[in-house]
Structure formats: C-alpha cells, structure tokens
Amino acid sequence: MDTLTLVLFILGFFLLIGGAELLVRGASSLALAVGISPLVVGLTVVAYGTSAPELAVTINASFAGEADLALGNVVGSNISNILLVLGLSAAVASLVVNQQLVRLEVPLMIGLAVLVFLMGLDGKIGQIDGAIFVLGAISYTVFVIRKSRKETKAIEAQYAEAVDKKPKPKKSPLQFLLQVGFILAGLALLVAGADWLIGGATAIAEIFGVSQLVIGLTIVAVGTSLPEIATSVIASFKGQRDIAVGNAIGSNIFNILLVLGVTALVAPGGIPIPRTAITFDIPVMIAVSVAALPIFFTDYRIDRWEGFLFLGYYLAYTAYLYLRATDSSALDEFGWAMILFVIPLTIITLIILTVKAARKNGRPQTILADQ
Image (cartoon, rainbow, N blue to C red; front, side):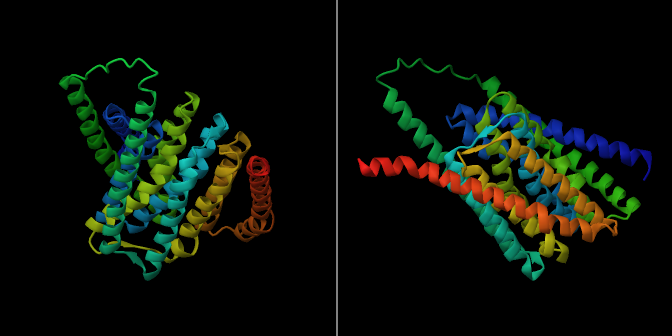
C-alpha cells in the first residue's frame, strides 16, 4: 500500500465525519422547523444523516465488486451502534429510554435483523428484497413523522388556553438556502470520503491477508459509525438523551431498510451474502438487537454499568473477529470461554433485571386493582 492510499484512507474518515456533520446540521434545522419531537428527529433526520456514510460506502463497495465489504459494513455498523455507540453514551451518563422505543423501534430493529437473515438464506439480497426494504423505509418515516406532528398539535391545543403563546419567528429564505447548502455539501463530502475509504480498506485487507468481510465488520464499520458515536456521545453530554438513543436505534433501522435496500436495488445482481455472514455475523447482529430489549425496558434506562457491559462485549466481538481472521490457535479457547461463562452470566443478569422490573411495574397495578 503506497503512502497516497494511506493518506486518502485517513482523509476519507475525516470527510465522512465532516460531511455527516454538515448533513445533520442542515437536516435537523429543517426538521425542527416543521415541528417534530427530538426523539423523532433522532430516529429519522439524524439517523438518516448518520447512516449516509454507510449508504455511500455500501453502494460504492457493491459497484466496485467488494460485496463482502458492503454487507460487512452494514452488519458491523449495526453491531457497533448498539454495543459501541450506546455503550459509550451510557458510560458517559445513564440514558433514559423513551417508551416508544421499547414498544415500536426496538422490536422493529429485531424483526428487520431476522428478515435480513431469512432473505440471505438463498445467498443474496436481491432487487425485490431491496424494493421491499426501501418501501419500508418510506412508510416508517412517514408514520413516525405524522405521529409526532399529531402529538405535538394535541399538546399545543391542550395548553393553548393556559399558555400565552408567542408568535414563532419566521425563518428567512436565506436561512433555508443555507441549510440546504449544508445538506448538499455534506452529501458531496460523504461520496468523496466513501470512495477513498473503500480504496484504503481494500489495500489494508490485501496487505494483512484479512478478508474484506472482516475489514467491513471492523475498520469500515467503526469508521462509518463515527458520526453516530460523535452525535450520541455529545447528545448524552448535553442531556439530549432522546437524540442519543434514537440516533443509534434509528440508524440500525435505516441501515437495513435504506442502505441495504437501495444498494440491493442499484447493484447489479443484488448483494451476495457470504456463508460466514449467515452462520456467524448476522446471527450476532440479531443477538445484540435482542439483548438490547430487556436492558431497555428495565426502568426504561441504560445505566452506566450496562454501558460498560456493551463496551466489553464489543471488545470481545472484535477480538473474536481478529482471532478468526488470523486463524489463531487461541480461537477455540476464546470461543468456549464466551459460550460457557461470559454469555450465560450476562443472560442470567438480564433475566434477574427483567423479573425485578416486571415485579416493580406490577406493584402499582395491584394497588389500583385492590382499590
């Protein structure tokens, strides 16, 4: 790998981050102007913006014939969004989880992960599959925005008589043009950054003899998740917990519906699914999605220790990928240690937390029933 490729690879990361920042800034301003909640902004506008790197990388990888890198980027990003993004955000400060996420978005995320597995059993995600995903992305976006606007109008109507409402300042056409300019500039930077990142990642894979699937699952996945990491951690610092959690969950939903959907539609022959992805990587994505559910509804919060638990599992997952890619003799021992000790202890802990939460939530209902 020459020096220029390495420089372009590094610059690709910065272009992705800068492009996503401009895209999110412009899109968020436009979304807030039409009156939708911070949670929905996180689930849609911010999630779209921070999923844009994955979209750019995956489409470019598919057209470049790097199918393993394309799929690995999406699956790896979804795993890192839960374990790494939410883990870091919760480690900074405990996250309060909106009940809507537990009722709708997390089950949807789990269902979509299972659907990717089922669609990939025949060896590819075809154009029909892609069309289904894209239609799902459009339907989901329209649904949550309409739902949020109805709720906002209902709240405004409820408090209209009690609160002296001040007229909202009108935005000038120049401000709207500036926000559109941010969006267009962000998209341009994302496309350039994705192209350079693909070239560098492919060169790294060839030098170290690591498969492109592993590179996509780790280096590129973390690189394209940097916008989510930055957005969620900063939102957590500022107390914007809805945006922090909504961004990660929304990105996972759109990574499947939009990124895989659009890529399968435009890529010749769809997206081939490697056997290793079916037997290990996609099941891990499903398991991580399922594991998030009990943590989310135990008091509707992610405590700091749970954030560190997520981070620990992400490090273990990355270590497993490295050992597998290098055919290390320690792979079997590492796998058995996870299967026999770490995973069972985590499952037992989650069951205890779930039972405690169920009992706690059931007590007020019992008291009301007695009355």
